[in-house]
Image 1 (tube, helix red, strand yellow):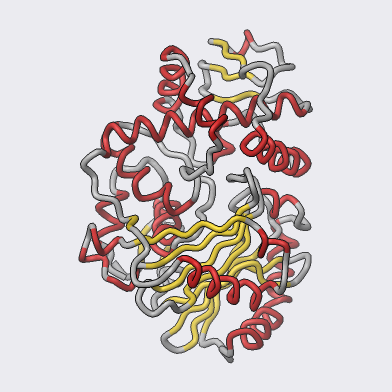
Image 2: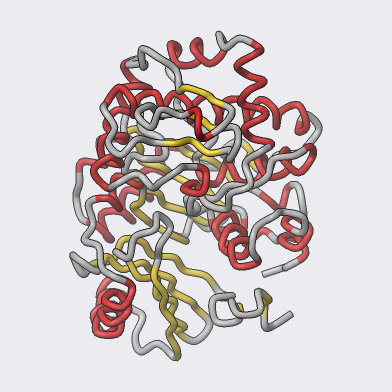
Length: 381
């Protein structure tokens, strides 16, 4: 994999080298990336949004007309507040922008309410409150505090309060995209029209890949969305091996919290590059372990992972393997394994509680073995 693109793109982003690596890999392979936040400023904002949002789905809400109208009806004073919020957002993860993490139960409720918000125009009666100092917050409302630049949650939240949280996040994402568009008008996009194949054909190939990995499921009746990610069109040094089609299976009205499925196909040979299920709704239903328990079980489950990969895809006896807790959402419920089989790397996530795969990727080069988290550098550079 050519490194010029990632060094140029991420050289000034205020996050750790490890997060830069993960984000770059996810964008390259079309994965729905972990929840990451950045400092949004000027041209950098435009560059981030252009490359990242198409990869994660965060900027591609299937807005229904009523939601779009709600966004467009925001007064300039409210838009300006969100712009200031974005400029003040220094967190690395989504949770850094909140006073506390949402519980699994709240995440499940948010996923359900988010679908109603988008598909049925179920909006909150009131906006998120806003105060200057933490001492001004009543402790009972959902409130943005300008002093620490965080959204503060009460200990327990009603559905109405969760709706106001959803509304705040939707407006903030909308404003972020609009601000990015001001900077990105002349920025070539790596997203192009589907070429030389029909979307129906891509969906059929993707469905076969999902059925192979997960079996038949309700997701086959969900809405599908196809994108053509062609980074070689904007940066030839990237190479055509990174050009791909991404097919998403999404629930009506769903966005970041809802369970969703994704398949990535090579643009020129339509080979399956990756298949996955993800979303906070999905993760919230998984069994949680402590870090020590998860790592112990990861060692015990290795042979089961090897067997699953062999049974599904025919790869036998990996040359080497490494694994880590997959904690995109702060839970120790899945383990990421990377296994080398001669010239092919198989990268999977393993659902510890159900002991089955929740994602699989195939590629010819791995940075997982070469990245040193202690020094924050790539060993092979």
